[in-house]
Image (tube, rainbow, N blue to C red; front, side, top):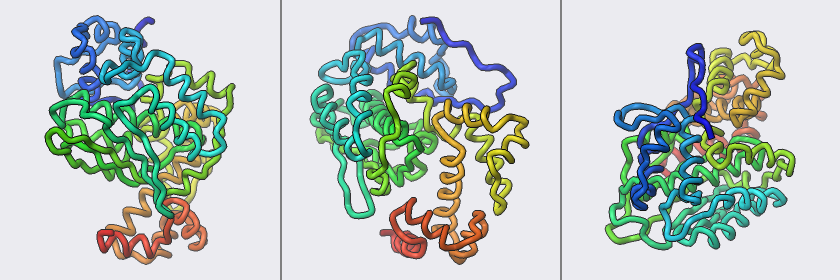
Length: 355
């Protein structure tokens, strides 16, 4: 597999990965006494500078190369390998599920067979739901071991990215609690998971549990992908999933910035095309390649701004709705309930009380 070409210098926005993720991905190679140099050289990645950021396409390339070198999609981090092809079988097991809840249930059962070191479960509490990833055994003596940290990052990223793809839309995580101290590369978590990340290291010798919270309504979403779409998705997988559903993708950023600058006016896809001098079809294709859509970006922007206004200001709800481009406050209420499972006023009161 030849190394991927770097992007043109005219690309002003390029998704990159902090070196901490690379170090975590390499941890399994070190445990097995395998030199990382040839793989890094093949992908054009230099780890000498800890502050350097790696283009996400090179990171995805290294991801796949390590998997094939070890014949292990778990990067050599667990008590038994996940043979190459495990991710494909996970996807094939989920594609026929009627809803996201069933897809996650199937994922948990499949992973119980191939990955006994981490147990996956989903809990639903009325309007809220939680995805839990729990150690069945301690993955490393040091709670902040790079391989242990990466194991949790990797599995959450895989399950969340796959869920987004199956549902055909970005799925917002309200919060994530990670069972280790805040790592040096934690600033990237906002790009990959959510801005609301917390860190609660486990006690020495104890096992830890990652808890990702989200709106329970998402579990009822239908699976919108079929076998034809799966064939395209698996091209470049599982490393490809690292490039999807991030907040720093080039076209996503350009569209989001234009939408935000226009508020309270609401731009159409044709309006965006006029400003970018691109056809709506080209924008749609580029966004799809980056794991997003025009509607998903617009919804995510309004959600992020609404949550920030309701928690950080005392602005009336009708004013927040108007500033976000809602001509009808009731439409904002309906959208907000879909995002959070609760009405704006109740959300603001709960945030103010710390609940």
